[in-house]
Amino acid sequence: MIRQFQNIFKIPELKRRILYTLGLLTVFRIGAHIPIPGIDTEVLGAAIRNFSNTLFGLYDLFAGGAFRKATVFALGIMPYISASIILQLLGAVFPYLQKLQREGEEGRKKLTQMSRYLTVLIAGLQAFGISQFLMSPQMSARIGDRVYPVVPHPGVGFVLLTMLTLTTGTILLMWLGERITERGIGNGISLIIMVGILARFPNVVVSEITLIKEGVRGVFTEVILLGLMFVIVGFVVLLTQGTRKIPVQYAKRIVGRKVYGGQATHIPLRVNSAGVMPIIFAQAIMFLPSTIATFFPNSDFIQGIMRFFSIRSPVYWIIYGVFIVFFTYFYTAIVFNPVEVADNMKKYGGFIPGIRPGKRTAEFIDNVLTRVTLPGSIFLAFIAVFPYILMKITNINYDLASFYGGTSLLIVVGVALDTLQQIESHLLMRHYDGFLKTGKIRGRRR
Image 1 (cartoon, helix red, strand yellow):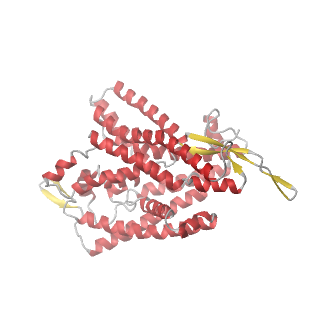
Image 2: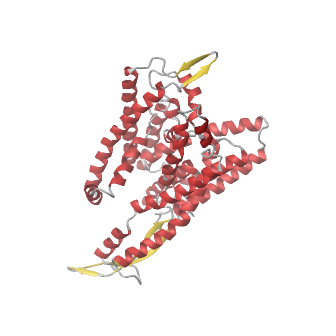
Image 3: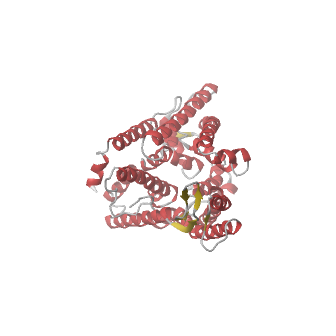
């Protein structure tokens, strides 16, 4: 393994790409500690604790803790992701966007440009909402004998300055992500999210060591938790990499003096084609009640209902799991079109052995995809709910439990595997051994 790491830095281009990526990610982490002007960071830290299990907590996850500190990168890369998802969903409705999606490189450039403009609009609206949220009465905290507001001098100036700062921070993050994708290694947007999530891990380790020293938790318990983490990560890797291969045969065609086709290949249907999106959608919906409840702290009726939507409630787990299964099928239907795949196969002379081309092929692929997605969606729901079950059983805090499943673990594993595969490709292209000699990374050619 050490030799494989050494091989990485023997290739000048790969070495340059990795160092370039690390440099831009460092810029991201520096910006995540620079607060926006006009706020009292000490009061903010005391006031924001009440919003950890709301939509604001989910947003803070993708912002790498920058939202909690109200830094220049408080919006994170989420406006750009939201813009991309909106255009992708609208592509299933509007013919013009469908046409752009089929135009290849030129269509992709136009969609990227539209995503950028939409990102500016979404970031501006969200920045305005955050400025109003920071100036609201509930954003205050008692320090000593007095209650201090987060924004000492609210007004139009603070709103405009916050909108300009946060929108600019999002655009800068979007630019950093695109530069990493183009000149670095891995997907830049995904790496920014992953680094933001992993930035919380050192604090988790320090807090666990403190608990051991204080005698709150034993060493044996920590070893069991560590072993459980490795097992869960292994299952998540299997979920991420699992595919069902449908064999495809292409008939021979003679064009001029050349013979095309005649080879056998396959269609890889992923067990989890939707990725982490179902969990994000489900979390956004499940956090809505708790987010609304924060604005009615004195209502006994609202607080009574919130007991059923607590992350430690079995009712919450069941509803959350059902939403994830639903959104897995919903998002898979959007990103994978069996009719389009069947038409492309028929156009180029491809067929599935024993299945007629055209409509029968589309129905066959759809049936297989439906059956493959079911166990994938159920396991995805279990991975999402498992951190909450672990919190209920062991009384560990949410920061530690989030690394045992849910959005955090799926993003980290998925992005790490994708980046590792790209490094593997660079090594094999220059006749070096792969990153893992006996591994089975998807995309590796022997």
